[in-house]
Image (cartoon, rainbow, N blue to C red; front, top):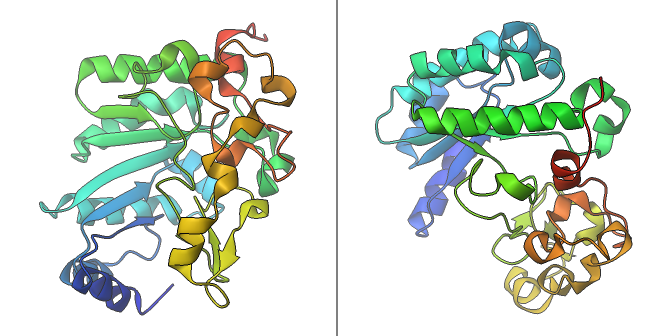
Length: 272
């Protein structure tokens, strides 16, 4: 989409920064691959959201899977790249993860991350995107099993505290670093933390504010999260480990958490 991406990457490298991209692979051609490598790209994350039908359904494009696989083959052929595959787990693909695992191993993928949909944006209107509590546990058990096999490194991504599965479904206890070690400049110049959090947490704009000044003197709402011990989190016995979870599960009202994966995994009974 951006013809100047290699130029941007090259400037980043010239200023001493390492850089990488996250891509759906749709426009990832051999020519673009070569130009990005030449510009110093060091890492790629590719989205692959199931086998062909499931992936194409989520991406709303019948060519998406084929193009993503071609991109994956380009990426895995470059020995100096650090890369992984990320999968959005939903109702359509939860039961084909074993097949997808074998497919990725065949394609020489070494690392595979999983995430689930948060109830934000257009996702609020599509129930097929959400896993039931039973399916969330199914996903966690699959990740733990896959990690034990050691054929591909599997892990659950930044979806907040996961109770008894911490350090089983990923390497360490989760803590959301949005606004603490992570800042982002969004497409309109807004200065925020992780791009996935509510726009109510925007701290400034590069077209009117100095980025370094914003980073050093704002973001207090993300650096002192005592306010997260409100609402359903107020009396939760897991708060000392969860610490309010991930910032993207909170909206700007500060007292409304949108989801709690740990509650679904640990406390809710399967619905049949």
